Image (cartoon, helix red, strand yellow):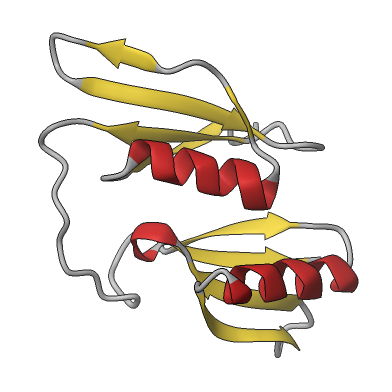
Length: 128
């Protein structure tokens, strides 16, 4: 068994799509739009990964205050292949104005990672 994809509701569908294409080299399909419900989606795939990310929006999606320690799914983690790539991507995101919450560092359980607050307060781990 494997995870096929994870879906994420977002307010700025095009902005999120561009973010994942620019910084994580995502490859996007064409937009799916259901005019009856207002649902719009993109499916993004990533090099060397079978797991995909579905970005979705619809008129009912709301911006609600988030607590980073809330219940439920809390972050996406991307393995970039090396410490140097973790450092480089973390620096690029920081220079683009995204907040670095931690790292790059070696965690207590031995991972080399950083944690970034991405668009729409999405937490992203960048690991080796």
